[in-house]
Every structure is written in structure tokens, then in C-alpha cells.
Image 1 (cartoon, rainbow, N blue to C red):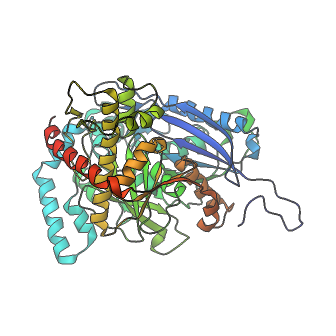
Image 2: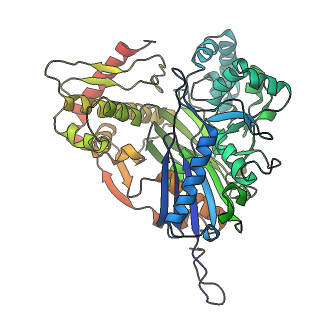
Image 3: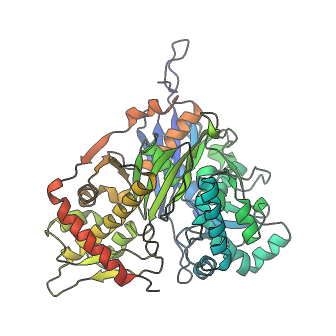
Length: 542
């Protein structure tokens, strides 16, 4: 293994390498400082203030977020008892599909960051998905697929708008935001994904240099709905259909891009005056999570259990269409590493209400702390025929009912809080197993093991119930900070601290493997079957 702390040619030990890993998520901003043995030397966390100016609108004020980013990086380095000049490189992991538009030269924002949870474009999504144009496009695409057997046309046959994509929310702002419309006419506006905006602020010294290249990494662009993973480019079809110029979008670069540049000292003040810290990697939170879970090979699968649950299965160097509501994405791309421009693909399925269900239940005082829920659920043998539908954002694949309602069903006078808590936890596992079943059907592969990460993965009941129901081993690492670790791993390889992924395997320590229990499988399958029947009771409510 080649590390920055290895012995140099004159036998003098090189100074240790320190990587500052920034992770900007939906609920918090974090920075960890790790050394070349992947030991955490310092860390800092700050909460993201999510604004809700009207029902269905979820925003983040950009300058407030920037101050938090500067603060956590500064405090993490201080916590590590290091000087900024001792940081070897910086790496970035960000939530996907959160965007803003602005004039980068004047710093004028046309709106706040619009997050991936935002539903302002819901009516537009419904209108488009029921339109003659969409149905015609799907039909023509399927006919072309039957003739060519090209998976790109199969993907086009099920193409639709979804609220979680950038496309409908950007179209909504272009139609309703007067300042943005004027700026677009004057060619003054551009779109920033969260990663491209952070890169601009870091590299320009918080706006001091407006000539900085406008770039985004491929794992942040791939889930926007504007990007075609089959051609590895912004989709000209989407641009033509909706009538906007892709020139307002950042240029897409691979994860091994050598031009990410350096952190401009002016972004952090006088203490950074003598620094020249390279930005070694930028990638989305789910790509970082795949790397952090060390899912490097075909058919490796991980499930991130955070605010939402995201299942990603590596499909290799070929982009596969998915027709169950899951979607093909670029997992990562390092151009200088292999053929096919270095692109590695995955299919992804999401259940957007996972950790949010636990947070909601806590706000309703069903329990005091989330870490109590495992013991509460285990305190009763079953839910007493109570079921919960976790559909605050509708039900995603393979159900694909975004008008579904949330709620309990089967409550009786004998129902206790413990029954309700267990029903909540079982419900989010039911949704996960639906994703697993859909993944196996899409890929014709039988999965053997799932690697889990994220805050909810610390819940033993959830992990064991998942193993029992799916009949798969569920592996949980000691360090569940998978996005931080993944961003660190990629930066270390890009910067030459480690040579390849083989050098990383020693850093993943398994804390526990949850084995499926055959004796309880039939019983929990019966419960899931009954829960599936309850889906119809909550469907098409809104």
C-alpha cells in the first residue's frame, strides 16, 4: 500500500496525510478530518435549516448554508489540532437534486436552494405524465426497443417526470419566477447543483474570482432527470421537449477529474492565507455511500437508511434500463482507470420516507429517543394486526403511487404504543423488501447480502427484521459514516495517498452480520402480505 506516510527514498518519514471530508446532507453539514489510516482526528457538525415557506415547498437559504460549511470545516480542523496548512486535500459529498439559479458574477440569487424533497411542481408533474406527448414518446420508444433491443429505448418507454428530479422544479421556476425569466432572456442566469455551487464558492474565494470553470461531477448530475446515462451527456431530448438551453447547466466532469483545483484562501480568511489545498474529489452522497460501503464489484448492493432509504446495485460497465420505477444511474466514473470512459453503472430504488417516519413518530411522542425504538418494538411479539403506511411523499417503486396517503390501519382499544412503534419500523422494512424484490426481477440476479449504512441502520430490530423477511444477510460496518468514508476513499486514490481499491479493504470493519432466521420467515411474510393488501386502502388519496 502506498501512503503519504510511507518512508521516502532518503529514509526520512514523510509527514502524515490529512483529508478534510465535507458532507452536505438534507439535515446537517459535517466535516471530518481523517488521517491516512482512516482514523478520525477531528470533526464538526451543524444543522441545516430547512425552510418551509408554504406547504410542499422545502428550501435552504444559500448564504446561511455557506456560513455553516465554512464553520464546520474550520472547526473540524481545529478539533483535529491541526493548522489549515497541514491539510493534504479536501473532498466533498453532497445531497443530489438540490439546486438554485443565480447570477454568479453579481451573486444575485433568483431563489433559494430548492431541495429534492420539494413538491412545488407536483401539478406540472401530473400534467406532463398524463399528456399525449409523454404517452406518444413512451410508445415510440418501446417500438424502437422491440426493433433494436437497445436498452436506451426501453428506458425511454417508461420515462416520466418525478418530483425528486431537478427537471420539473426547474421548469416551475422558469415559468413562475419573474426575475429568473428576465435573467434567462438576458443570458445572465445559470443553474447550480449543490456540488457545483460549493465548488464555485470554494475555488473562487466566495466569489472573488468569477472566471472559475462551471462544473459538476457526474454522480450529482446523473439523478437530475436532465442527464442521459446512456450517452453520458445532458439529454438533448429533455432540452428539446421542455425548451431550455443546456448551456445554463454546468459542464459534467468525472470523479477523477484533475481540474477541481484548490481551495481559494479568501474563502476562509487570514488563517488560510498560506494554504494551497487541492480539492481531490467531489461526488454525490449515494455514490460516496457506495464507496464507503466498498461496493466496487458487479452485483454488490448497499442500502442507505437515512432521511430516505436508497438501494443501489452495481450493474457494471453497461447501463441497464429499469421498468419497475427504479432507474439506471452512473455510480461513478474515473476516466483514466478503465474502458467505457471509466463509467460504472448502478440501478437505484428509493423509499423517500424512512428516517422521516421515525422523526415524525418522535414528534408525536410515541417515544423519547430514536435509539429506544428497537427495544420498544421487541417488547411485543407482533403489531397486534396494526399496520402503518409510510407514504408522506407517496409510495415509490415498485408501487409508484405518489398520491398515496400515510396512516395507521387496524387500531383497536388494545393497541399500545409498542404495537404502533413496531408497526412503524416494520413498514419501512416492508418498503425496503419491495425494492429488493424489484431489483432482483430487474437484474435476474439473486442477491446474497446487503450492506447497510446510515443512522437508521443502527437499529437492531430493523436490521434483523430485514434479514428475516428478505432471507439475506445484512452486514453493518463499525463505522456507519459511509458517505464521509467514501468521499475520503475516492480523494485518497485521486491524490495518490492510496493506489487502488485493494488498498482500501483493510479500512472496512464489520460490526455485525444479521443472519436470516428461517423459523420466523413464513410468519413475517404473512404480515407483509397483509400490509401489501393495505396499500389499496391508502392509494390515490390525494
